[in-house]
Length: 259
Image (cartoon, rainbow, N blue to C red; front, side):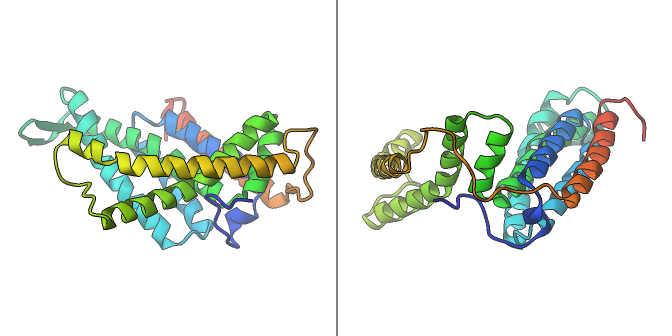
């Protein structure tokens, strides 16, 4: 029914069982949480997510977009956390009100990885997992059917909503609407001609979708799956390597071991 964030490829990550990729994503999240106060310890996790992005075959365009947005977020994170920890550690840089210390920089880098690493991991997960198999995976881990269906549909509709929003903005600009001029209040007011048709389109799509789901008797009885994913030896090896790698980093980040 939907493709959503899924990108059709033949890659190592696409060939893995969705359950193993979900476990891997949660391990990345756990390691990122454990290393959030020391960015040096979060670097191996970041490198591993970039490797997974490469193994998913999503292309350099997606990688460059994520890295570019990550750099912008890193600058914001540095300014915020460097200010909070400006009185701790050795001063590395001082520009007017901005005072960056080694402690503040490590924390800023750790908080940066705390957000970026799981985002890249789940981008890889969703981009390499078909919505059909995603639904199957959620039900395998005992997520209620209706809740799993709602999540998959919302995730699948997200790209189409972005496209529709872009089309509405282009159409309104062609009619002379200027969104980047005026005060903040005026700019907010100018978005009303965008919000109204966007919501109208969304409601129409939701109504059509509800009819489709009703005709397919969704929500009545237990659902079965024709195509189920199989756990392979590659999944076992992938999970074992991930458990060792992220387990060591998590213990390192929590101070349980010294490397």
